[in-house]
Image (cartoon, rainbow, N blue to C red; front, side):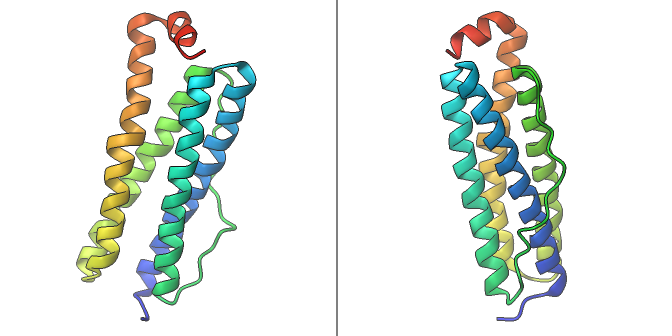
Length: 155
């Protein structure tokens, strides 16, 4: 089924964001593992898989719409040097993804591509209610109990 060219372009932009998130989460998970923060490692390694599933859904939809997925594009990585910076950088990625998903969902609605909009809605729910929410919780814990106590809880 030949899809709307602009929808395909937007889906490729979203794909770049998901691939960037995969790369950033991947390096952060390995840094957490190296530093001995096993709980953070496990959670962020799980996020890598979630982001991979999002990328997979976008690739499948682009192909269905007879487009060509572009896996060569990434946004600049924001690799943190501290746990707090890593969490903040990951949250920034998620906030951007939420904004981009909403924008593309609105466009899909305007061109009556309701199936693509529904795929993106599921991704948005996962991003807002799981990924971004968890990151906000972690940063809130650091603020409430202090960095040293937070880090100790992640061993």
